Length: 411
Ligand SMILES: [Zn+2]
Image (cartoon, rainbow, N blue to C red):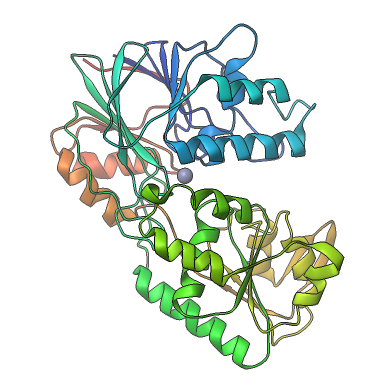
């Protein structure tokens, strides 16, 4: 089995792993300006996708251009999320070099889509493939690829701890080689219940004092997690942005969330913002939490909310995820002001950060890999893949960090 890294090696974004020039795992997009895509577009016989985040599915429609019609295998939520993201990319970049596919390509994805549940083995390009729940977002999967001689486990993104939305991964299928993500290989997450406790106390205090809290959140996974937290603690909340339709969609796949009833309650508890008749400006003086995209303040309805609430120190902005350098969210945390909609805005409202991560941290990665002591590990999807591979080698593992474009022979 020859494995080539077309993206996501030594970096986060544009994940793409090609097996024997035949089976493609993920085909993502690195959001930057301009966006970046895998180093080349192959012509695979079949495609298998780990989960519905932009850095794993963002460039998928480009694989069904010309005469190419490879079947695309994924779980039902991953398919839905990929289509939502593709349509969003068309809206943002369609018709420019920053969008490597057309509306026709996106429609074609529907024709070649084949959905599968967890632990339901299927055939793709002559390989036996099985999905296992990866505990990252609904529908996320570890992908086991078996060619009859070699079993390759591609972890995709995963979490070992429970979140309210999804349970942590417990699957440890036998494998002869493993490609392991390493997003937080040098981070120790604060325990999730402590993070949640601090968040809830902070929001409740602000609402009690008469303020409003804007909760920037990624549309996929994080928005639903925050709605679940709000419902569990009876915090009045609104939801806005792409997270609304993702929440509606996930309601149709109860088997891919941890507690479908809780998600249903959270959906009923939250008020969905339509944005009609100046509703956004009107609700900024409500004593409520407003859960909205974008998670890093780089677009979405947050662009309306932040200017409205920023002047009052009684209000609060609570970041719920990692803020990439150069984003308005990061600038706001570090300097107290940010460029919102083209204008630099000082913010008097209080700004806080909470680590509601959906990835395993250092201890989580090590605990997971402890089940694969004698298995060669290829480290990818991280900013410090080589350093983590070195840590693993010191601990007795056969670990490497392939470079972008490199091919590794597994025998
Ligand atoms: Zn992800």
